[in-house]
Structure formats: C-alpha cells, structure tokens
Image 1 (cartoon, rainbow, N blue to C red):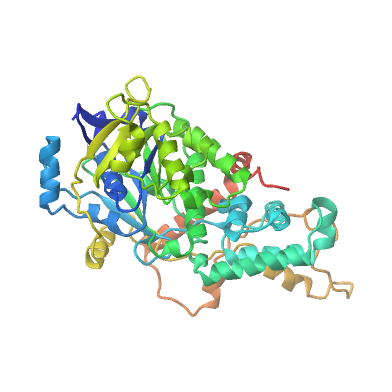
Image 2 (cartoon, one colour):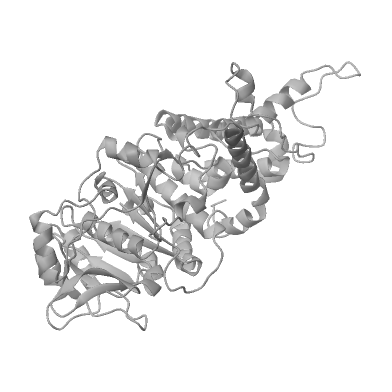
Length: 509
C-alpha cells in the first residue's frame, strides 16, 4: 500500500483506498445499528494515524478506546485479512483520552467567551428573544472588559444586565426580567447536568489535538462520550465548538499531501436535530471552508437523511453500510443513499444497500482527479487494534503516560466578570466624599468606562485555606496557562468577531 493512501477494504476488482491528499474533502459513514460503522471508523482512524495524521473522534459506546491496545487476532479478522489479501498484524496506536466530565479522560474545557452567544443559545435551547438578551450580555461584557470564563461569570453578567436594563435598553433594545430569568433557569438545568465542568480554564489548546508520536504516527484523541450522551445537546455543541475553534485558529494552507487533522463526528444527527436554519447554514459554511485549513471532517450517522443536503454535498468520500427498509422513511433513505453514488453497472445500488452483510459496505472515494469513483461493494479491512473497549486499568495507564498529563487536571479560577462585578458593587456601596452613595451604574452609562482585566490572583484561591507551596515547574505551568487563556479571551477578539460573522453573527435578532 502506497504511503499516499490508506486501505479501506477490497472489492471484487481492486483494493479500495482513500487518497490522503483528498482526505480533507470530508466524508460520510452511514449504516444501521450493528452493521459495522464503528469498526470502519476504527480502520480509518488507524490508517490516518499510520500516515502521520492526528485524529479526533468521539467514542459513543466506549468501543473505540480499544485501538489503544493491540488486537487479539480473532479468527474472523484473520479470515477477513486472508480474503482481502493482507497480513493481519496486531498493533496499538498512540492515544489521548479526553472527557468533558473529567472521569474517563483528561478534562476538556472552553470558556464562555470562546463558546459565543449562538452556540450557547443552541445549548440552552433559548428562543429568539432570549437569544437577543444573551447577545446583549456578551456585547456589554466585551465593552466593559469583563471576561466571561465560567458559568458564574455569565450569571453575574446577566444579573448586571437585568439591573441596568433601562440604560442598556436605550442602546441595545428591550431587556426583560422574564427573559433573563428564563436564561438563568436554563443555566441551572445545565449545572444540574454537570455542564459546568465544561466551562472554565485552562481551556483546551488545539495544538494538543494535533500531535504525532516519536515514530511519526498521528495521535488519536478519543473523547469519552458514553456519559456525555446523557446530555446530547452539550455533546453536539461541544463538537461544533471544537470545529469552530479549528476553523478560527488554524491558518490557511490550501491543499496538502495529507490533512493536518481528521475530525470524526459520530451521531452526527444530534448536531442538526431541531437546529435553526442560521446554525445549519453556518455549519455548511464552516465545513466548506475548513478544508482549506487542512482539516477533514467525517460525519458518522445511521441515516444519510440525517445530514442536510447543503452539508451532504460537501462530503466527497462515502462509505455506506447496510440499511433496513421497514418504513416509508427507511425506503426513502435507501433511495437517497443510492442516488448519491456514482452508479456501477455491475449491480443495483439500492438493492445492494439492503443486502450488505456485517463488515461489508458500498465505498466511493475521490480518485486522482478529484472525481468520485464508481461505487463498489467492499469487504472492510480488519483493524489492527483491539475491537472492543479498553479496561479501566488500561485507560488509566494510558492517561498516566499521556503527554498532556497534569496540564488540564486542575481548574484555574482567575479574576473575571464575577469577581470584578462583585468588587464594583462593593465600591459603589461605600460613602462618597460628598456623603452620597453611588449607584450600581456609572453615571456616564455602563458601556462608557470599560474596566481593565485585573492581573490579580483568582479570588477562589484567596478564599481558600493556605495550600502547600507549589513547585517552580507547576507555578510556571499555571502562569503560562493563565497568560495563554488571557490571550485567547482578549487578544483574539478581532479574529473571533470575524468568525462570528460566519457562525455567531447569523444570530437572529
């Protein structure tokens, strides 16, 4: 197999491969439950890793974690290898485990500012009016120099907006107490679902998802999502946020010999279920434009109808496992899937989709000219890693040797909107020299005199008992993390504003 392609499987006439230089043209893996989508995802992830391409994938059932352990050479895989004409070689792949809840992997966080009002409105299921109020809160925070890092910052900012509704309304529009209260209640629901674990610092650095090991193989970042799926809206919002961060932070590179990163979006229907048109349009634009950043996005779902047509049109590499046609909608899905392929006169695509066995798929990828190949019925190659989950002990051993060990484990709570607004409230309560008390709103208006971000230590640390003195390396690490987070929160406002014109600026007013 050439180093310019990865093996998917073997059809009746040839080896079916994916050209690395067209892997950033995105892809789609579909099929009913139990038809082999997870194994196909693992085969692709292993192929990209061997080619030196970092991979990010969500692990819905826990099975994907097995690629961190050597395969066990079961007879079905040995038989499949013989049928395809390749040698089965057990292998393990460099892996980093991540977990929004911080239980089965390194904690992964984002700040409220990085998430932005459009994605937060989607996460909180806000209506149009409530989304407008949330946008006002973000706008005032930007103008006041108030950092929105975690949920308590957002709560404090919403309370500030409610208290100053009259003066803010003259400039930004009506701010009702009912809308603020509704947003606060949705934040409480999010907290009860442990969503507060996701918001804070240190925020995830994109560079930590784009690693290679000492052998030059791409590191596979696996998001433990079995518990996260209890809150599917948080799952979908997190992955969309990560995609938007990649879009914003990575430079334009054009077409490369291989992608800089491949992103697998499992259970992709969750992204689009009930999504407003503005969000769907934004996803379509990001998917279309992120190709030039060297990132390939692969959607994994049961039904091709789960993906909007505008997004589906951007997916050049297709792997279709079996579908079942028990209902009229199922039959429509089979027809739709068949029509997306370049037809093969050797068989009827629609009939083949219904008759595929486990481990079989219809495959069409982009050829050397960038055109879709004729669809072929394909036996999927056996993965080299274990098919099945890694044990808790194996997972802990991988985490103990992780290159990001200790970097994200401790949450940092530096001074931000919550502490700054508390300090302002305390200062305004003090008697003035004229014997008067100042109000909670500056006389020139709440947006006229933005307060600079304070470099002082986090208020949480000042309120806690004294801790053992940190080592120099740990102190340097925390200072570096705080400085990096500050740059991300403040220094990229211009870039973030540009990005919001694509993703956040389409918010309904």
